[in-house]
Amino acid sequence: MDSWYYPPGRQTLKSYWLHAAGSKSPTLPVQNEEKRNLELGGHVGFDRLPDQLVSKSVAQGFCFNILCVGETGIGKSTLMNTLFNTTFENEEASHYESDVHLRPQTYDLQESNVNLKLTIVHTVGFGDQINKEESYKPILEYIDTQFEKYLEEELKIKRSLCNYNDTRIHICLYFIAPNGHSLKSLDLVTMKKLDSKVNIIPVIAKADTVSRSELDKLKIKIMSELVSNGVQIYQFPTEDEAVAEINSSMNTHLPFAMVGSVEDVKVGNKMVKARLYPWGIVQVENENHCDFVKLREMLLRVNMEDLRDQTHARHYELYRRCKLEEMGFKDTGPDSQSFSLQETYEGKRKEFIVELQRKEEEMRQMFVNKVKETEAELKEKEKELHERFEQLKRMHQDEKKNLEEKRRELEEEMNAFNRRKVAAETLMGQALQGCSQQPFKKDKDKKNFFSLPSACSLTSGRNLN
Ligand code: GTP
Ligand code: MG
Image 1 (cartoon, protein in one colour):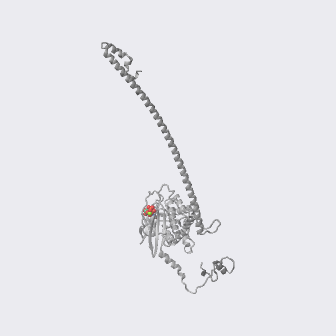
Image 2 (cartoon, helix red, strand yellow):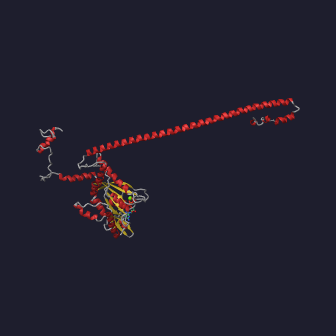
Image 3 (spheres, rainbow, N blue to C red):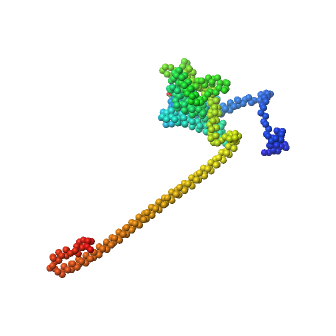
C-alpha cells in the first residue's frame, strides 16, 4: 500500500493503528458504537428519500405472480377475470389430461401510473388422474425452477437483479371444492408439500352452491383439518399497526368463500358483477353473499407487498440456504468460526479434486479389469477354436484313411475280376476251337460243355474260383 495513506512518519498500517490507539499494544482500535442525536440547523433535504424510492419503484414497475391450484373447471379463470376486472386468455382444460402441467401467462397491466407485470399460472389437469399421488410434483418443481433461476442470476458475476424478470410465485390461491364435507387427501397433501415454498391462501370455490350454515361449518372443518395436519397457510401480517386490525380480523375469515363472475347484471340502477339464477342474484362484491371483496382487499390492496416480501425473505431464503448448503457452502466451520467465501471455495475445490482423482483411479481400475476379462475371454475362445480344429483334423485324417482302405479293396477286387475275365475268355476260346474240329459230336459235347463247372464262369464269373 502507498505510504501517503498514512500520517507522516507512519509507514505501515500496523504502526498507524498503534499510534491511533495511543498504545504499543498491537490490538486494533475499538469502534465507537455510541450514537448522538444532533439538531439540524435547517432543511437539508434527505427527508425526500422515501419519495425518491417511490418514484424509482414506480418507474421500474412491479411484478406479481399468482399460482392458481385447483381441479379442472373449479372456477380459477373466472375468479382471475373477476379479480382484475378484465378478460384474460381462457383456454378450457379437458378432463383427460394424463398428468398435471403448469401454464403461465404474463400480462402487462396499468392502473393510474403504476405498471404491473402480472403472471397467472394455472394448473392444468389437476385432480383428473386416477392416481393422484404425484399431482403435487409438477407444481413443486415449477416453484423450485423459478427460485433456481433467481439464484442463478444472483450468483452471476454480472448480475442484473434490478430489471430481472422475477417469476417467483408470490401467492398460491388453493381452490377447495365446495361439494365435500371437508378437505380431500389431495388438497391436504398438496398444501402440505407447498407450504414451505409459497404463501398459500385457501379459497372455497363456487361458494354460491353452498348454504350459509353449510359454508360456516365447512370453513371451521377446513381450518381444523389444516391445523391438525400442520399445514401452514399465509397469515395476513399484524405487525404493522396501520393494517394490524383489518389483517387480524381477516385471518379469522379464512378460507375465503369465493364467487366469480364476468357477467354484468343490473341490480337496482347499478350494473354489478353477479351470477343470475332463476331464484335470485348472487352479487360478487356483496359481502353478505361471498368473501370476494375481502380477498381482493387482502391480496391486492393491503398485503401485496408483504406477499412479495415474504416470498423473497422467507421462501426464497429457505430455498437458497438449502441449495447453498447442498453445494457445500457454510457460514461457520465445525469450531463455530466463520468461513469466508474464499475458504469455502478453496475447501470445496480441494474436495472436488480429491473426488475427481478417486473417480479417475476407480475408472482406470475398472478399465484394466475389463481389458483383463476380455483378454481371458479371448484366450478361452482361442483355446476352444484350437481344440475344435484339432478334432476336425483328426476326423479328416480318419476319413482319409478309410477312403484309402476302400480304394485299395476296390482295386484288388477290380484286379481279381480282370484276371477272372481273361481266364474265362481263354477258356471260351479253347472251347470254341474244340467244337469246330468235331462237328458230328456237336449236340452231345454242347450238353457236356454246359454241364462243366468252368462253363458256368461265363455267366456268373464272380462265383468261379
Ligand atoms: P379450467 O381452466 O378448465 O381448469 O377451468 P377453471 O378452473 O378455470 O374454471 P372456469 O373459470 O373456466 O369455470 C368453469 C365453470 O364454472 C364455468 O361455467 C363458470 O361459469 C363456472 N363458475 C366459475 N365460477 C363460479 C362460481 O363462483 N360459482 C358457480 N356456480 N359457477 C362458477
Ligand atoms: Mg381456466
